[in-house]
Length: 454
Ligand SMILES: *Cc1c(COP(=O)(O)O)cnc(C)c1O
Image (cartoon, rainbow, N blue to C red; front, side, top):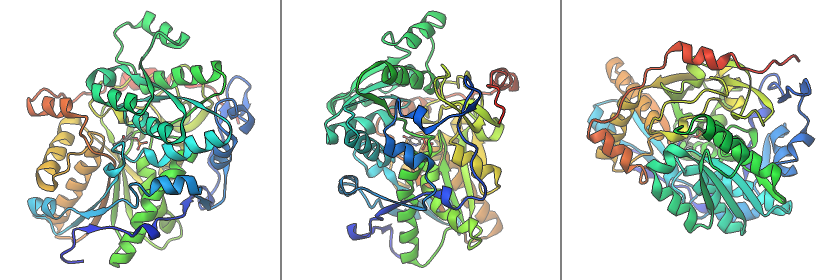
């Protein structure tokens, strides 16, 4: 342990099952609701856009769910992912804390997202679906699904949030190389996109709008389903491979993290690293401090309301109970495009309500400062989303220094930032701003929450 830097599990130790936290949560998470019908949504309603296997995982209470062989074989291309001790960062901070990060940037798409893109494509394929429509923010999810599309020989259509489409042109090339078709969102090819463009021609777009466009495409086209890169229970389930590996890696080291940190957009990479450890917290085996980190300009958990809301701007999804800023909320055009989502995964929201996790929000500039320090010390250039987790890990390590505590800090380095050079360039040239977010903007969007009577 003393000299090692990297903790790599042998391929034979790759977990064979995902962990379903729904088996261990006290109580039941509130069910999805159909405001038009005034009653809870049925699994059948979801069959219009999702394959039955994924719907079954969505509502499953089984603790362990087998990873299919075909998915397992593809996971092996980059998994198990390394757990790395950030010794140079520790030294730069002069902290007694031990900082570890799980590096998900080793996947072909460069983030954690293929962990769920691969099984989602697989389950659609075995249910006879050949076309998938989806949205993407920063381009990470779109490229991950494009990658899965190439493995399973499926057609992938991606609606990419306009601001990212302009900021990250090479993500687009990457998706095209893997055979996907890309449209900037809002686009001219859906009715909803056209309506938004008419109303706000220069909109930067948002994940909420792009989701509506992708769902519209799935609903109006034959043999076409929709795939979501975060938020839903089955997505979080697939991501638990991250935390399950971490647990094995820490077991081999004979230590256990005191603090676990992840950035949150829709909540999937955070849940992926945290849920297997939260199981120990629920069972009162450990008291780990678990922190979700979000951008100040899209503060879903720290300033949103825990209420039923739609997952998309056009209200096509069922209403789900989650921390939300309101489905009409359009976040400022920060560079962490993957964190610009108005809602939060219902399971992450629920564990927050239970007091099992905390949340903090950071402004854009201190977050990029943390990313730059990480790049200079550890070498890896992090995705702007991941720098939120790094900022928090650094602050916790400094706290350890001030209190002279030797805590073990683990954070999820959800992806690399190789396609985010325009953002880093702006940061270096002093062109980034910290966007303030007036309470009225949140209150206004919250006025539009659907009425739900259970
Ligand atoms: C998409 C993305 C996120 C945010 O999404 P979650 O579902 O909250 O994980 C974070 N980091 C990276 C690198 C991403 O691509």
